[in-house]
Image (cartoon, rainbow, N blue to C red; front, side, top):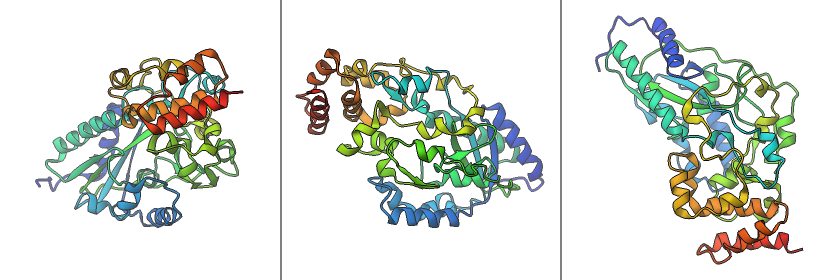
Length: 353
């Protein structure tokens, strides 16, 4: 590597943050690589089985505590956040209309992984142009990285009681990404927490997945149930899911700090395919080809057509009874997937009376 020995790292850190803003990030910070405290808490959480079927978290738990193992020579982590909240139909009005499909607002546009990664690569390229070749690696929810801990250490916010990162000036509606680097940049001080005695995120959780401050049982979380879970959604939790067919924003919608959140400036996060206010019946009618075409480039594509229909079947089971709802469900009673047929049957039984 050919890093210049005359680089002023303090000045470079300031320049990196300015470049980041030019590239569309809302804020950047720099942290060291010590995540030992958070890593211990993670291992305790995993031991309780609260990760559910997310085996990848347990299988690579050691790597999460060793940033240097992910990229040898790493000395610092440049953490970046980018606002994602789109100009979309009012979330509360959609949640209050059980015939509509509620999709977590982060997933209404293009897949953030691609957008964030491309911008981080551009930033890393600018750094390389300034200092010469150096060791770095870009991450965007693509490896066992403790993103919230890194961002918190870098001064981008604090961990809220719902376990997400919070900021006073922007709430929590943003994505996180990192550049691991061997540049010994000066680190930023962490911020203090400002949740106080507030428990609104805990109280509003539809499935009581947030068991207490900083205690999340993913097995009850609607985001886990509709995105991560590959099998059948527990029957007892289905009525609590309501019309949330991909993810859940309730804890964030209730958080007072999100009054200060800004709309995303990134065009790629704009609503696609009218997903901010689509009808459950309309979406349930999509065949696999339509799903692939319309979800191309979307984060939703990762769950596949069958799980998409599974989630919609639950939503239809919770929707007001109508001829259209019942007809839509009956059209799927002979679907090749046994898992989907079971969810459809459950939904039909909900309307049998």
